[in-house]
Amino acid sequence: MFANLDFDVIRRALPYLFYEGMTFTLTLTGLAALGGLIFGTALALMRLSGFKILGRIAGIYVDFMRSLPLVLVIFWFYFLVPYIGQWVTGASRPISVGAFASSLITFIMFEAAYFSEIMRAGIQSISRGQPAAASALGLTYAQSMRYVVLPQAFRNMLPVLITQTIVLFQDTSLVYVLSITDFLGAASKVAQRDGRLVEMYLFAAIVYFTISCVASYGVRRLQARIAIIR
Amino acid sequence: MARSRGGHVNYNWNWGIFFQPNPMGTGTYLDMLLSGLALTLKTAALAWVIALITGSIVGVMRTLPSKGANWFGFAYVEFFRNMPLLVQLFLWFFVLPELLPKGAGTWLKQLPNAPFWTAAIGVGFFMSARVAVQLQAGIGSLPRGQKMAATALGLTTVQTYRYVLLPMAFRIILPPLTSEFLNTIKNTAVAITIGLLELTGQARSMQEFSFQVFEAFTAATLLYLLVNAVVVTAMRFLERWVAIPGYITGK
Picture (cartoon, rainbow over the protein chains, first blue to last red):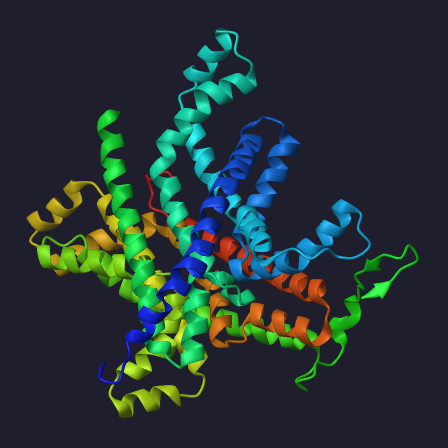
């Protein structure tokens, strides 16, 4: 059954797959995780702030994003971002944003909803005495968050945050619907050009599988180490 | 796109578009979206049945006192969890027919509704790994005494799971299962890539035919929110109905 397969097509496509495709995928994953974590932490702080309106807004945003399929959100932002850009810059027509910027904004906005739930759980896992002690020492709310609560919340949630980033890494493959050359997009372009769908998709599957497996093994190791420290 | 007085190119809203006939001749654009919704629900329902059945079997295997079964359960979950759903759908759709013996491969490729069956199976197996993990956690959360008591009463392993562990575990994991079911519905949208015209796919083609991007996606968004609300409400009733007296969720 593997007789008429041509695995040399993969070797020839390797530079394109990794220099173009994987670079795009990993850059998008990294920046989206960072942006999503910052925005998500802001959302979590809004929900826990005690200001009813702020909390309500953040809650609606999170629930809204979490009830939509990512593919639909990708389409939304792809068409919406040029208009938002027009509105922000006051330009006379919708501004064109590149494929990378558009997908980065999409993933930051979408993943923030998921990261915010993780950070909320992290912040709530810190005992009440900690912010109380911080304010007794004269730290402001911002200082207490910055130096006392958030570092611990981040550290406690690190395994979950990385697991979510692995999910994000896999989800970036969905930019395929915009014909972007991420890793899967590159594999698919070669597959269709050379008529070698089986080889290219099998190879793409193996690469995604290996990276995700190694990363989740790392998470399990990390979890074990953190568990000992506590 | 129309030019307004300020020289700005603005979006041309037209909410009446939903009641105009679609170019496929299958009624209005609204009918198109609703048929997409129906296909989303049908695909999700079949995928969920697959996910529940295989996920339960694998989840139980991960808790059995057998090294082999544990290992198989672990490998199964890792296999389906560490590949993007999109890649899995491509494997089912493009790769599997080529690797089968010729006759079977041709039969598979010529199957009517191939995108539907592929999506249901692909999403189903993808979600089954998540169901397995939830069920394993549910069984693991039961006090050890339950299993011991069942053994002491002379129940076989099958009976212990059938009458003691599973009825408890499934009730405990009902809330996470609800979100996995919602994920199943959302994940069917990935099947747009293999040509399934589910809700997102229909919204996308409505946008391509009518150029009314934001109306099409707003309607799809509202329909997804509606489905979400219905499922959450229904599951809350189910949770109350099967609640175990004495547990936090019980009366």
